[in-house]
Image 1: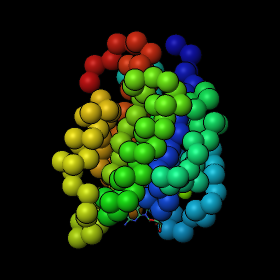
Image 2: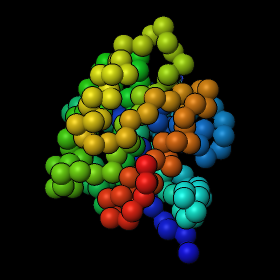
Image 3: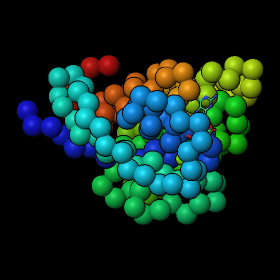
Image 4: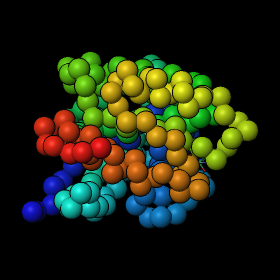
Length: 176
Ligand code: GDP
Ligand code: MG
């Protein structure tokens, strides 16, 4: 089978670790001070269930609750990774606002989404509970993961899972 090219936008409030997750996934390293204003596209090949994928990751510069949803994040995007930090209630709220905007924009009831609670290494600073976030993801019928870009925890899972969600939405049978 030829590789399938899939494009995924990584969105969320600023400073939640969007770039760190992308760089950890693509380069296998944790970069401590990455320019927050940079908007970058990363590519990586990966194999999921025997199928080769060329994954294009759009690492966005970050949104807040007032951001107008940029049209370029809806066109030819196959799936979304919505990142918040478990240490920021605000970032969790922003993720939900972005989700609503994505649905409005796409005019669909469901969209392939992985909700990611990052900075899972900062236990002492946690303010968003796992249960609370899982409930929200359940109502979206989305995948939910807690990750640490810093400790390389569950980072690769994000991208495998988003590909599986995209395949499901395409009507291709994949088992969970
Ligand atoms: P972005 O604005 O969402 O792209 O966030 P960045 O990737 O630039 O990260 C913002 C800050 O959070 C940086 O100082 C990162 O080093 C830090 N950071 C990112 N991910 C983690 C993580 O998993 N754990 C911890 N402790 N810090 C993180
Ligand atoms: Mg960034």
